[in-house]
Image (cartoon, rainbow, N blue to C red; front, top):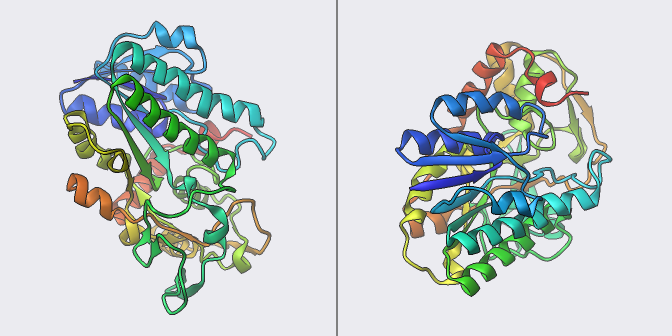
Length: 355
């Protein structure tokens, strides 16, 4: 299979490129290299025989000039829930990257009759009911309080695909949700296959360390380097919870989607995550870091941060039924992989998140 990966030198894109190349696929991809640290992935991918092109998915002419592919894996995005509101990027930039860029990808797929796998996010789910979620604390982590009514589409197993997607969901979430809708419409209108894979927090070695995008890598690198750390919001206890998934665990489902027959539209969207088995609070992550590197202080700070949620774990039951998919890398292995990378790359925070 000839596979084109957008954002190929980002964390998810480069990880999938290596996995696909190792599985025998012909991999090409492009990146605009504006993300700090992304340039470090170019040469290693090229050594694997991956064709890495410098291009910007916001540039329609550049997209039209790309080589033909059988499938596109869209891994390019500004992935921060704070994008457009944090002063580091404008709202227009977020829309240009995450939505206008998707239109250009879809026009490429239309012209080449290439299939599309859109990597989406848990952040398409509505903030308000998640923020109001009744919770209890278990083992230094928040969990849904099943003794009280839970929102439709949410159980102790996580958030499923029927959960509300009504605003507010953040500019990032809105651009990804709109991209999903456009992708499905283009696929139906122009006869190419489209799959939307909504992913939990992606994590692993080489992830860029920013608190708003790669919390596991940021926390572990910061702990090791004695950088200041705070438990923000939720009483300053660090009990807020996210799941995590190694992007290489997506390889089996990508290969099945490459060969899949046409599915009903409802079956084209599925959650992919580490689920409750990977669900980890910041406090639990700190405990892991203390065992691995030694203890240190984390400052309690109840100051809330926009769009933070107490508990968001994706329920991947549908993916298991549709694709016989389950995550292969346990959370302990993901954390250890990040830790070893942090030890081997002492300047990683400065490289991937320059001040």
